[in-house]
Each structure stands twice: as C-alpha cells, then as structure tokens.
Image (cartoon, helix red, strand yellow):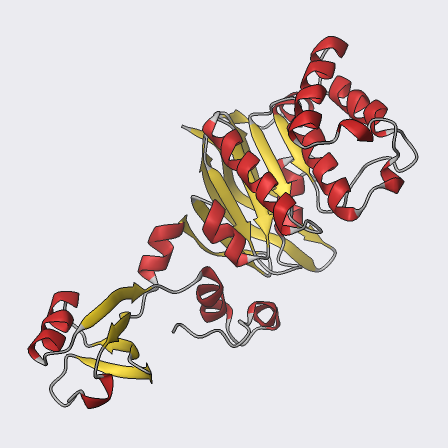
Length: 314
C-alpha cells in the first residue's frame, strides 16, 4: 500500500517553475530517494508534501486520502536542510517542548528522549544550548527531534551534512532500523553515492521536472552499457580479432571490456578459456546513479555538480 501519492504537482514563483507536473508514489516501509542538484526543486516539493507550501496544481494523497496538512502533519517528521532549532534554549527543554507539540504526554516524551539520548550518547547535553554545539552535534539533535514521536513518514533533507563518518553511519543505521519498524523515509540529497547505499526507489529531478524514477537496481540495469571487468593472466597476448568483445582498458591484466550485441557473458568466459587464459575475476560493471544522472542532463548547467572526479571503473 502507498503511504504517499503525488499527482501532477506544480508550483511556480513569479516566472520560475520550481516544480512542473511531477508525479510519483511511495510504498509504506520503503526508503525513497529524492535526488537532484541544488535548485532542482527538491525542497519546494518537500514543502508541499509537508503542507508548508500549497501546490498551484495537482494533488497529494496521504494514506489513500487527500492530504490534510492540519491533521496529517502529526504523522510526519520533517528534518529540513535549514535547521530550525532555538539557539539560546537549553537542549533538554527544547526537545521536550517539540515532543509536546507532537501530542506526546510529558511522561511519554521524557521516556523517548531518554531512549534516544542514551542511544546517541547525548546524556550530557541536557543543559547545553544549541549554540554550544558543533554542526554535526546539531545534526544529531535535529534527527532526534524529527523521529521522537515515531511518525509514519520521515522526511530527511540532506541528513548527513556536517557529520563525520562515525556519526553518519550511526544515523544511517537508524534509518534502516526505522524502516524495519514500518516507518517510511524520504531521503533528499544531491549525494548520489549515499542513495545507492540506502534507498529502495528513487526519483531524479532537474530544473523542476522529473527525469527518472524507479527501483535503484532496475534503474542501473536499464542504463547498463554491456561493460565487464575481468582479471586474467597473459592479457597482453590476447587475439581480439575474433573476440565477441572490445577491450576498452588493459591495466596489468585488469581488463575493462564491452561485449558485442547478442553476446552472453558465458560466451566471453568461454573465449578466454579457449585461449588458455587463467581467469581470476569476472564482474559486470553497472553505471552509478551519478553517471546516469550526468547522461540524462549532460550539457545543462545543473549537470556539472555531478561530474565524477577522475574515477576509473578499474
């Protein structure tokens, strides 16, 4: 069952179409990636889903019914990219205040706060002020306030910004745990490598328009280019005149090849065996989401933020 359905959403500011006729759906318990460069329309889309903005056109369904921001927001946790904590307020008082706004009793709120503070080793933070925290510490605190009331839908906008690798993994593990417990998560970012590791399904947006959506594994299959990585002995003495593939790179026996059309991977292996070559490794090379995005929007100014930094498939 879908927890969220977005149908033909549109939002315009003056002459700028921030979101243009975008549709998608999200299944309950899934981790959904909303991807695109800065300025692509991701934040505007999230603000419509949370009721901060009203769409100019289109419809949002939450749990099968028309989205009612006043009532449905109680079932949503939103962690915006622009952090909204009160800098001068004590952290413990602030978390308790935000929990009470989500209709938790004081006793229930205190129990949940204790649980999360212990899990994230934040017990000593109670009397500190937000202004005393580093960016990474503030990020952990914001995450706790977002999930404290156990919302059905959790929206995380660039949740790993400012986090060191240890705390990034801590948040990542909790995202998986929340999904296992039935929460649905929207993960918005411009970092493609994080999405490949975390998300089940994705939508790619650019300049306010949807350019791609689907399951991560299927998207990568759809854009594969028949590339394989193979490690063999004696790679410099291979006769490729009759080979069912083209060698694109050869680095000390580590080959990157592209198979010809209608050639199976078994035929490639058979060719090397017939050439009496000892095979140490054989793997299909699938494109990264980063590569796919660049291919789809190549030549636009938005694509440049995603250019890989001299990465080699070998």
